[in-house]
Amino acid sequence: MTQGPVQNVQVDLAVAGCGLAGVASAYFAAQEGLSVVLCGSTGGLVFTSGYFDVLGYAERGNTTPLSDPWAGVEELSAREPAHPYARCTPTEIRSAMREFLQFTAEAGLPYADAGDSNFQACTMSGLPKTTWAVPQTMRAGVDMLQSSLPCLVVSFAGLKGFSARQFAAVLSSRRPNIRAVSCDFPGMEGRSEVYAEHMARAMEVPGACEKLAERLRPHLADAKFVGMPAMLGIHDCDAVCHNMAELLGCPVFEIPSMPPSVPGIRLREAYELALSARGVMLLPRHKVLQARQGGNGWTLDCGARELECRVEAKNLLLATGRFLGGGLQARRTGIRESILDLPVHQPEGRSMWHRLEYFDLRGHELNRAGVQVDDACRPVGVDGQPVYPNLYAAGSILGYQDWIRSRCGTGLAVATAQRAVAALREQAV
Image (cartoon, rainbow, N blue to C red):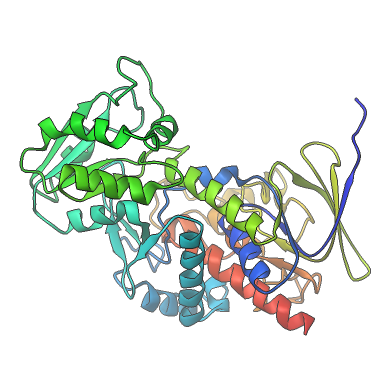
């Protein structure tokens, strides 16, 4: 097969990785007037629930959720100075999150945040989740959990991964007056399997809300809330949710369901459009095949499998994630960073990667592996000095943190992205 022509690009910043950390890095850099290329697949976003966490649990092994994430961040930073949150103040993290929420709203996905506290939000299992910000389409679910007013939860025949009966059964031990019903989705009757994304896109067709409301009205009875799996549109979900609430005469809320999730698809499509509108060049199906540092910048060979685009960048920011995102690789000899083979904080040997008990409340040391950085979010070597002066890292690739267990994924991604971009600008001045 003959290789096609290679595209050549010159930018101030190349961001490797298109998860939340990569998106946030590209956004903050574009806001600073930098030219940016974002390389990687945004497909990882479809695995998200749509909730934005700051900090849900403070200590390793502590199962009590935090009511005040900001006090928790301050305590965590003091207790674990190597944690990435220690590179930022709570004020900086809050500012970064609010700016990112504003960007997300401008992209067409408005969010509600809990201010100085955390929300308890719905999950598909029926158990509440501690988080800081939720899509507006899920905000009424937070109110429902705090109320004892009657609630109807709806599932749809053929939709896998969400059961209204299970949701109601689990939640009924914590909250009374909850009923479950299953019905056919209008236009998809009799199918053995239906998909949330197809339903969501169908909900944006004129008349779809009216048909669904008509199907649900016989089941309403005295319900003061109606919950259903996340499928109320893709590009105008807030309007669809509001329309359904008006038609049913009570607040309507979405519940995150199994990936690929509709909230994740919304984020992916909204961010791609919003970043392009801000001048960010997207290489969504490319990965960094090779990176070379020379002179005053970086040369990146990017492509799906072979070289398709060569990027000359003054700075490089790694937001490649951990094992699922490909930023880290687990090998028999240890854990390595996948693009530049940077030093990785990790247990001394494979025998120390995991604890004996899978559900050990302290977590597994493997999940705290990652790249160590300085206060400017630059990866450092064993001597504590930056490996390269124009190399930065943000998000879950950073070591000394277990973002899944502590529920800090979005806050970690956004705060370290802003910190890295701010340091980059300071370095350039």
